[in-house]
Amino acid sequence: MVFFPLKIKPFLISIFLILHFPLSVFGAAITDIRFWSAPDHTRVVLDLTEPVQYESSSQENPPQCRVELTGITSLPKKKELKFKDKYLQKISLTDLGKGKARLVLHQKTPLQANIFTLKPDLGKPHRLVIDLIDVGQEKKDQEERQKQKEVRSKGTKIVVIDPGHGGEDPGAVGPRKTLEKDIVLKVGEKAIHLLNQQREVKAFLTRKGDYFIPLEQRVRIAREYNADLFISLHADGSFNPQARGSSVYCLSLSGASDQAAKLLADKENMSNILGGAFLRPASLSKDPNLNQILLDLMQNNSMKESFRFAELTLDEMKEIHPLKYSSYRQANFIVLRAPDIPSVLVEVAYITNKEDERILNQSEFQEKIAKSLVNAILKYFN
Ligand SMILES: [Zn+2]
Image (cartoon, rainbow, N blue to C red; front, side, top):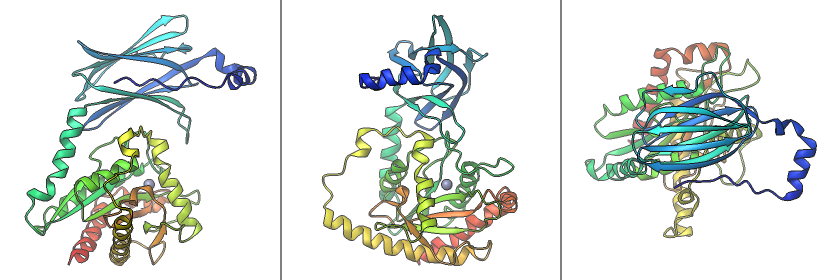
């Protein structure tokens, strides 16, 4: 299926834009092309100095996605990119003259293209995002997750660990350019490895590499696994370089426990915008089979369990790193909204603090955090 952008704007707004922002009529320069490989899709991102108009088409033989861009002033030096990727062979850019350019994504197999734009945010420019999705693989992965509960022996607990951010969304950035998305993936991998040595626990990651998953989809993955516990891993960031310490958060349905927790939830919820979430209709619709009263009961119970797990986690974490708060805080984090799964968000330390950044990069410290999480998980299930 091919998606076209919504280009029709009210006539008056168009006039206003032309009169007041004459620069944009000169067009956009394409300054960079990046790509991210995920297990079920590949994302290609074009960096642009201005927003562009585009039209796309797909063909099956040979499989490729073409995007014709209008209002282009210059292209990057490299017009053809070849790389190792499960789905893409190469990308080529051709100057068609008169401000037009053609981008061709040469695929290894037919894929579904979802194309959308992202506005400048946190130092990132205008972007055109092309997601090439292997719908078959996506479905296979989903089925694989759904049968995990059945294939495990009775009583096995399933834990889903969610390394925050990824791909276009780096998360918080340290003074020496350490990225939150990289650190939390390493900690998550270590925790999974330790947990899977336990007979009574089976653990999975929501994200296994450097690519972005929308927040709602992380929740959906945990629900597909039928998880007994969900932990979203993060590293904190602040304009104050002195800020340090670990903290643990739970969901609140009735406002945040304090202003700082609200600001943190707002920041973490921004991930969808920064990472570029293309939410497909299925993820937005409510499940008609779920009864609201039952849902509230489940949510209440999950939240109580989340509080219990949060306290156990704080108890373990204070042994390895100073705590920012001695008790858990609450706010409306999108990623903690599974009604039937106890869910917590852990900020392991402050990546924006020089000393915290240094230890976050150490494999021993990552291992220590992973161990403290595993201890808390085992205590929780016992
Ligand atoms: Zn984060």
